[in-house]
Image (cartoon, rainbow over all chains, first blue to last red; front, side, top):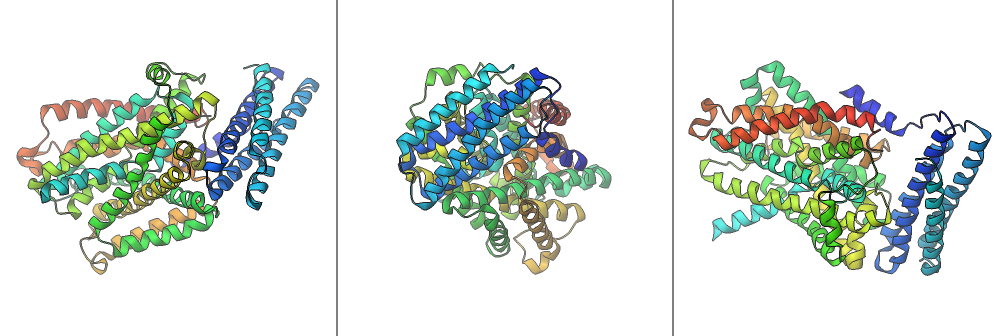
Length: 141
Length: 407
């Protein structure tokens, strides 16, 4: 039981290798879906920013920035099996890095005072979310 | 009138005390991924916990001893030790998860990192267990946990698509495979039937000196309070299904899970839900820590309980203290409390037969129960549930490994 308990987080946290381009693409798609989920959540919070407390918003954005960082580093640990996969990696890491940067920027604004232009921030996040979902849709499932 | 108030207060306490970090996490996660398609598991879990909690409460009221005081006597020291080892390990993991949950709630309220709150939560929990009367402690945190009713009200305020939610009751809206669906079904059952609930309920009955005359009050708490607590669990899932599922948002943190209340009622809703989460997790911290002390002390035959002075139950209080320190240390390793919760739920599910089989056996033993042994309905349902729990226990770990813990 103890061994299983200790093994479980390791199993869950492992980035398994990609066997071929299809497998790599599938992992890239899952990464894009996870990032899109985080971006959608932040958009929801930003749209309702005036109705939420600052400590709450700060914590929510910190958690999401950490989540996006985790998604990025977990996928980054998977070796691309071909040159085509290298191009896929460049595209997805570009998108997830952009997502992480946007969330961190919003977090800084909340820490300083409040989100300067919530409407624009929400629209930018919606566009980024659409790009992530479109990328995920192009990958093999 | 006094009796009526006591029953009402007990029921309200049972509702507020039913939801803990496991229920919060499991229901919000499941609601955001599977909508209401796993609501049936909550119903199965609530029927199960009602069935076995009633048996455990009846044993406490009739024999004057908690169920696990009788396990070693009835099953022998070896079987009792196996039971103790499994239940104590899972209880400790649940205690760590509850402390982490209370600290996370404080982070949401203040913006100060939860790791700074963890030692404070542990210290205050220990002080409460040391100084506050059992009944006061149970009532205050049980009633404060009722603030989570905000999830139920928020659900209606969010203007849900009732047709879609109704459809989800019979159709899984997720693309995830069957293994992931069943993994979360197991986790939800583990959340609804967490072993510490029965340890605490049974030992609490002895702390409150239940007798045969209290059977009615005990049954009202179980058969009204627990199902209403289950309704709260479903409300958490329904809020997640309403807010997150249509936008394909998978929640993974406590901060994300409480967002629906903020969207429905703004800052007041958010404050209420965070208060409710803190009360529920802090109350469960006390219950799990006490359950650790109860199980160890009852197995070894030490003096136990809060109805005697700490000096007279020194080893019981030492167990509480050590369990709390170990749980605090575990969370301070920076392990994610939500992950700890998820693993504790699945491991709880794997150990459910070890907890509930002795309850069923002792509730059928006329030497302890006299004319209050299980009736035909209790035994039929109890046997069916034991078969179900055995299947769940066998499937829990393979499902966790096969799905990489539900990923």
